[in-house]
Amino acid sequence: MRRHSTVALTLVMFTLALATVAMAADSNVGTWKLNIAKSKFESGPAPKGFTVTIQAQDNGVRYVLDGVDDQGKAMHQEWTVKYDGKDYPLTGDPSVDTAAFKRIDANTADFVLKKRGKEASKGREVISTDGKRMTVTESGKNDKGETITDTMVFDKQ
Image (tube, rainbow, N blue to C red):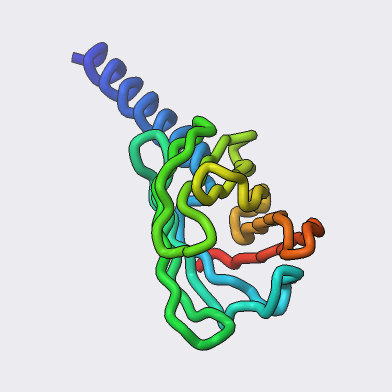
């Protein structure tokens, strides 16, 4: 009887360890609120605010962004990606229609946003070591062909 208890306990501990590793692989999962004061927008006026909810899903993540743009209009965007560098549909943003993400490490992912197959912008999403802050740096070209960079800082809710 004692042997079965030990095997069962070992299996439970192994399952918990695997769950912990899986959770660590998606450190960006959760709800994140844009911290406008700590963010910098070279691309134009800052939005009034938004929240991004990130959920683990099928070896990747699902993003849902809701907020208010600089004109006071409601924003809603959604995309689901795997960390394989392939393009996946993005809805709700007229300037892009696909997103591709690639995991660099447990706290970092690179991304490319495209419109009709052409790169619109690219960037990096980094989760702080304490898991409380996400910094997204995104670069693209303005109408003059100059590279501009937005740095968005999010606080975990």
